[in-house]
Image 1 (cartoon, rainbow, N blue to C red):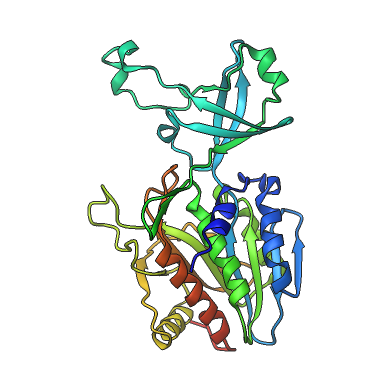
Image 2 (cartoon, rainbow, N blue to C red):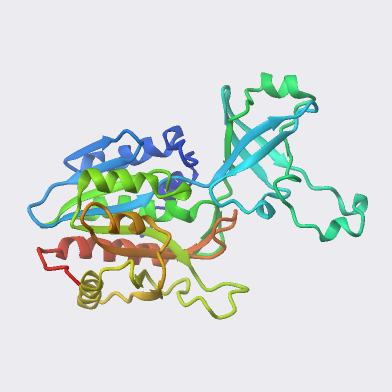
Length: 345
């Protein structure tokens, strides 16, 4: 059963790409340190937790960074002008709150929205863009904003908004990829007898170029690389192209980024333990840490294990708790069943 309080803690801990040290890194270390043989932080900031074994060397990665924003200008009236860190759609920021991490602690700002009464008809048709997004932090001028701790370079993220919709579904910013990070943490705790030599990696800077996974996979040099990341669930406006659904269980990709023998082995494990896997066709690179792991050194046998969510990269990402539970169960069994095998396609 999902530990809601821990999930919330993982989701809400600060950690925009490149700034994972602001909170989430310590949360991960604290949660896994008693369940592994060694924990270290590399020069880029990845948390690498090693659970020793004599079997195949496995790297399983869930990225701990978030998309966010950075202040690039403070105007004379004290308003902040911002630029994106990672794939932020400016339309999702209108009339929303942003949590900033200043020299003087956490501060909040709001993205203003001009009331419809004051808009011209043609203005109502214009979508928000980065030139029109302005953050009001309550300051009466630039000097006061600076006294509050704001600087060019101050980073921020969507304000916490963890919401329980039903018994099985929650909505919150940053399920991408904190829900998979939570699942990986719980897998570490649940793991029992295993032959594999397992490196659990809470990777950094995935949202800005898969950077953490690149250096971690080079250092670890795994035979098998498994990325845990969210994927799209069926939702309003998908026009029937999305196959995975909320409540349908964990998702595994098929395609050129995926080792076919490892993928077939995953199916065998799922069948053995009565776990249904949803399938996602990925004819191109998956957009996950598996992309970079696959082409590390002389090549790595990769797979992607996903939890489906709706409304990705918004403040209302939505997940089904049953999918989280099943993903943890499957990840545990998969890692425990891994044995030396020929993974040459």
